[in-house]
Image 1: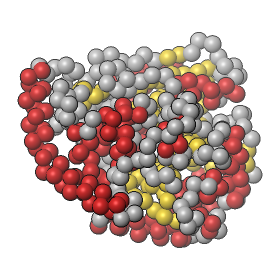
Image 2 (image 1 turned 90 degrees about the vertical axis):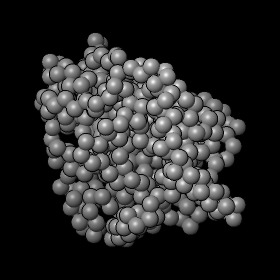
Image 3 (image 1 turned 60 degrees about the horizontal axis):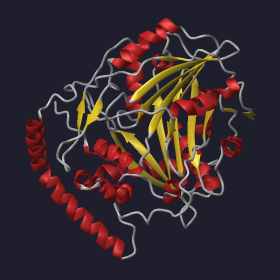
Image 4 (image 1 turned 180 degrees about the vertical axis):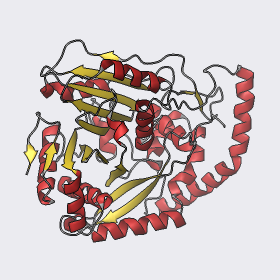
Length: 450
């Protein structure tokens, strides 16, 4: 099986290098008792032999495709020596998210555990989005917790001689020529549409903001809801678990002012496209769904219908953005930034990712059930100027594990949601809107919505 990166994975890595930031997934577990360190070490050892343990090797050709290789070094398990109060857990998670990961030369993931002063503990697994999407990360966790080693077969780093690499990568480029030609046609079509005043897929972003370029921490928060209560509310509103999450996402966008000119909300829904023995890190199809958020709290049937129609449309009409990706390896880094919206959301979209019902094993990093689990999307290293280019960011991830639904939220909207406190308050209000009893944030740390 070829170790050449899929074009989506190649594009995500290229965008991150151009922007100087990293998109991460962070799996978090909370125990109300000390973790079993021996079990956590076994989990860590299996992660080292699992699907997350690979890195990217660049091509010697400036336009060559990147390849997966086996890393020479592994991240060590971090056990924090000095316990901290639970109130400092969010700050520690942010420290873990800001810990440098090196998808090109080092390890793309890191596992750590923090003892709490009250006797509990928190565990964090941070991984680069370049090596795994949400479903890929869940698979890696489930396999490692089950004691299953599932490393994706890849050659050792630096195993190709330079002339061999030049020859093989040149041949790969020749094989890509038909797709490149189609991408050029699609790009010309998009350019013509843009000149006629429409926003075409892949049209360049506006010039870089002249605002302050200071680093910014994007607010995150997690909602915990009893699974039976979540399902009952979805059914009562004529929807499903998926459409209830979409309704929450739409309501959040509306309250934050992240809406289109006519007041509607555009939801970006990633659909799992992973197959057996899939070597892609990001194996999803993205579907855009336009909904009216004002009715979400009383009737989910419209959102459910709109999502169904969007899924049918995507099966019939491929995503135009995907047609442009063969051009990405040909672009110098300075131009990659200006094509960033080929694969990133629009300035009014909200990502709404439903992972479904996860197996119980994902909740056992030390071999026993954690009391809480969540999967976060985090983006360390972003500057305020970069975030302003996309008019903020908003993403929700949800899954059901062991009778509880978590909804993790990453949100930053200029002038409305710019801090964790503001985000938690908005989420509390939204849970009230949906008449859903929920805990906003980690237990024993933040208030509960009624």
